[in-house]
Length: 187
Length: 152
Image: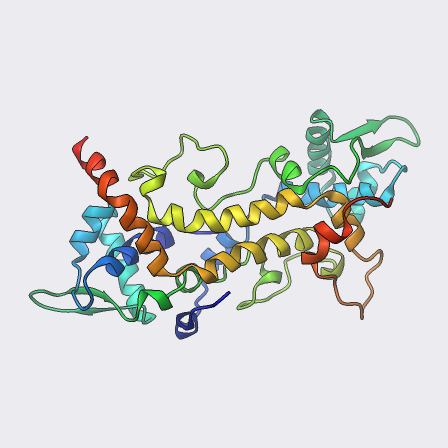
């Protein structure tokens, strides 16, 4: 794992515009969806109301209702009406990968469309074909590495790794230890 | 995450890496071979020059050259120079850390936890891949691909 010395020779520059671009690898919808699902995984058997999730996670309630409807349609959550109604997971948290959530809620924003899993009509104008594009080749490895992680990470890993409250002096767990060492069992 | 500018830059730098050492390459040549708008390419190379990635030689036989060996220029470095921080969210940035807007608590943020791991995997690739790797791959693909591309 050698980092070439060259990287230190350049000055990192940030413009506001580009920072905004880089800040949106996952859509807002997807990040809200992950938060809501983690909340449900931690609530266990108890159904959570839209209002409850929205308040705890800081998600606009109307937006959240739409996200939950999408998740429900895909069979990831189920809803119950009535006074003790609300939403709960319809699948075990141990089998729901983050990649599946990401795909359900609109997919990751890959740096270029040709790097997405389903190649599409939206190619670069000058595209010489994926095999011949040095930029595509160079970056697809990085994208695949990231996506592989999302495929290997399940909801229960995430839910169990987060502290229940927000302890001021407890360091966050190293997420690299998640999938292997924490998979399976437990509720 | 990655702009068109960075994508063109990678293509152009791969061209420079493939040129014989010490031999400048004309902007017009790169623009034509990689189908990059010439004006845009000029601006990109000027920016890369400003950051010491390339330098130029004027006059007859002039053009652009890499400032250092392609083995020492990583993709991560190129992306940081042109696009700024490469972390997916600012709270994961090594070079430009800041709290995300509206963050309630970093320690309990599930999205940060998820992205932290995915980012670690992708940045690792970007830090390990150098321009020499990119140029090498491009060279391998170029022979037949380019023929078919221009004969259409």
